[in-house]
Length: 270
Image 1: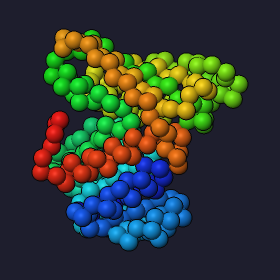
Image 2 (image 1 turned 90 degrees about the horizontal axis):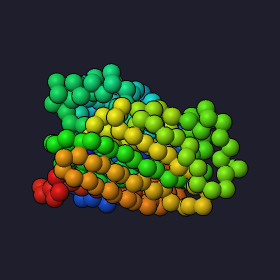
Image 3 (image 1 turned 45 degrees about the vertical axis):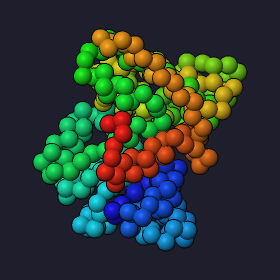
Image 4 (image 1 turned 60 degrees about the horizontal axis):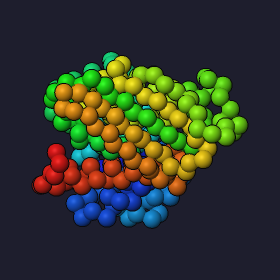
């Protein structure tokens, strides 16, 4: 397999390092607006090659899978052109799919060009249960996320609210609303809400609560769902990525695990 990774930040770098060890992976193309991040990986991983962002379209014939690990903006810019070439994609900035027009465009392009769109479970657990339960009827799907102030700094939702994260001494609710609003206001922090929305009852019906807690060093997610299947509650307390406190280390591991499953012949828990 030949992979192109768009974005060499926390998730992209960890993913490149992990899949580099897989014998089934022959070549890893990497690209980022900050070329120095790409060069750092190329110097350490001999299967990697740098391509500029403007070269993405021209190398599609040499790539089997494109992994977007950059931002919602990058996803909206590059994913459609990749799908038009019939190349499979894996999206980490899945919050971009809260844009109904963009989602429909990508799904239609994938169908018409015989390409696949992969969305890893990311930093949350319980997606398998939500997926299974979606064959029935949901009464409620809720996500409660708790993060340290460092993980939320700079988020549009924080800037808009005027909350001074540095002054917090105890856990404080900084957002409570729909998943659609959550991914718009916290585009780098709450992609898990988008994944749950796609699997379950949609962006407008999925509820999200974001809590900022200066006394925690974990990124925690609690998924609560109720329906004709019964009730489920899943909780994960993630270690933040050492490269980016806004990202959970598990999110990068999830992407690597997804690629291993794609390459494999046996899928457990599908």
